[in-house]
Length: 190
Image 1 (cartoon, helix red, strand yellow):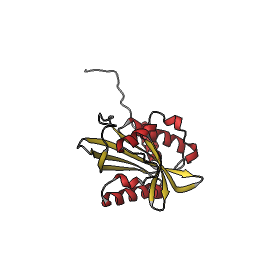
Image 2 (cartoon, helix red, strand yellow):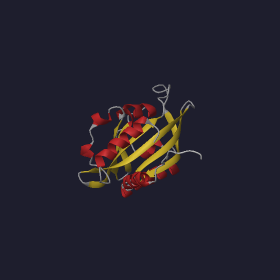
Image 3 (cartoon, helix red, strand yellow):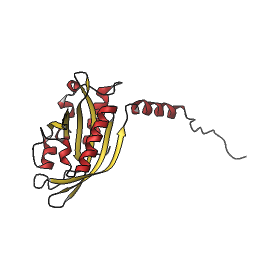
Image 4 (cartoon, one colour):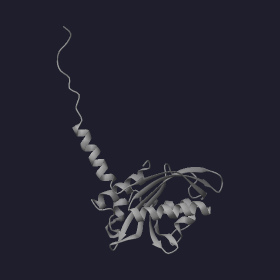
């Protein structure tokens, strides 16, 4: 994860979930995400697919409209990309895994920007497959923000964050502690 907003949202989500695969929606405190709130969103799983329940102000400004109530997949202009996005969201919910994607986007006037997308599963009243916490943020705030809007996006990289990744990171850290250390002995040439 490269963007500060993405890292902040992931670290907060990871802390909340503890040993669980996903935290409850009710545990999310917006104040804890205040530095990334403009880039965050919550998706609700509807029969038509994922729909924005909440969307941050900078996210709405990137697209030039309020996103609440709109289909998440509608952010992608072509049908194939919409299907890929729908399958990605379904995988996040089915596997209770996170996803980090790199996107390249272009505005209506041809400017380009690189974005980072984060999708993290949430439980809602004990139910899985209910909500997703996410972030979509540019590495740097574009100078055209508020003057131009995104017209097209394309995914250029994807990494899944599997539920057992925390255990794997802890095992790697423990293995590093058991490695032999470099030891210097006093002495010299004879």
